[in-house]
Length: 604
Image 1 (cartoon, rainbow, N blue to C red):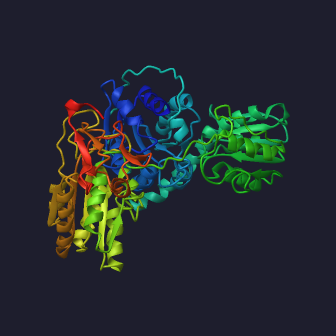
Image 2: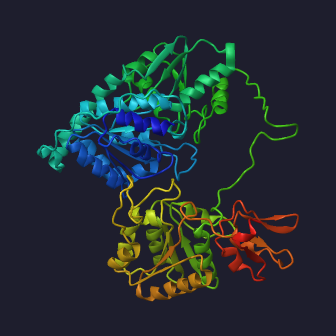
Image 3: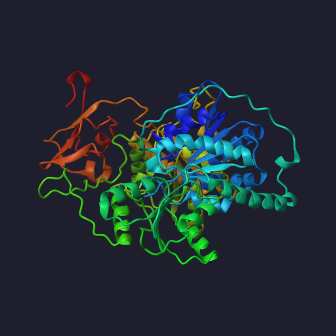
């Protein structure tokens, strides 16, 4: 797997400290380092990406090679220390792996880390395959140390989750770092920033020249037309050209593996003598803009086409099909519709649409339902956050009115209250997200005496990204027992006067707890902690069946939306393979038609 290749490449390169925060598609990198740790590497899931980067910075100051992992939106959280670290520099090599998510498949945005590299003035590596990612991560560490700068490493989803055979090198221990040496350069001061900025600009020119000879930047072919590409899109281009066959005219091809600083000398060699160029890349037109700039600066009579000209799709993930169409249009070729051998006569090749939903038995469904029913006669706004519980926006729950970024449920609710004080404003936030960026928002609400209801959905794990531990689980990434940070104690320590914990699967008790929390907002912020483990870390409960004779309504579907319950031949059914025995549907049924099956009776 590409993420495993990155991890093993970092170990082979002598990484000594690995930090990060889980986020698809990057999540498997750090656990792979932990699993293959030869015993010399410090590995931790940090509280958030900012913390992860700062911990790694300290280790890099002392000469250790460090790796930081996150997804593209996590870089926003880490951007404060990142921008300053570009000026301060590092001693040991530091590689910041930021996995981008074209599509997006599992993210709020499609932001392009290559553009962030330009903004932060940091070098960027852009691997095209798991094999290349393995080799390139070592190059990134070496360049980082050579120039004393952090380096961004930007795999995308298809590289992170693609699979390939990779020959792994020596994972034995490297020489120990020589430690921290006191020096004024480690203290960032405004009066030093000007000189640091000049050094950065000079450094970028040197790296750009070095990148023109970099082994993974490739220039091939000849002719009057050119194709420029990057990353996984280069594989799509190769497949598309193969599909178009012998009708392809002679052309020149440029593949850019290091988009910033741009390999100017190599790019000029590519552009020289060309009439037209098509640029195929994900996501921003980074290469396209650089080629346009060079063509204008050097007065080259070449037309550069791509996203800006509408010849390549401007958003979303590229594919072999989309790239084939773009290349065919550029080359003036006809594209034959691809034959689909998997679909029968009259069948569509497209898979059925299955919208994401909360798992059967998920305690978040019970939490949302308790709040919804308690607020049935009140005007209320339900602020959501980043996690599994964002799926609470789907019908029939319809319980997520806002969702912006990690921790924003708490702060957006405060802004909404300022404008609509007559409504009850809820902020739903998960346990891992609470530690990530939720706490400052709670402090702000207490300080400004804003009466919101904070609902912490504590399912004892970081569920959406792969069940990683967090400060509230009492376990570290390496499996060590750690001090378990109690959310209720933290909230009381922050000055929240009303803090109550309850089990959301006890429906009537949960509704009563919601009403108490709402009443308590008369004194400011109140907090309700719904505690029930994620079904993937809890044991399966008893089975349930629907008594057809007693069943007289469809409330179990129209109110719950549990995927384990469906209607088959006008009769309600519980899928025993999906049911986790949470008992919520039985509590909801007004006709007692949902009955528990004792273990001795077997599965129904």
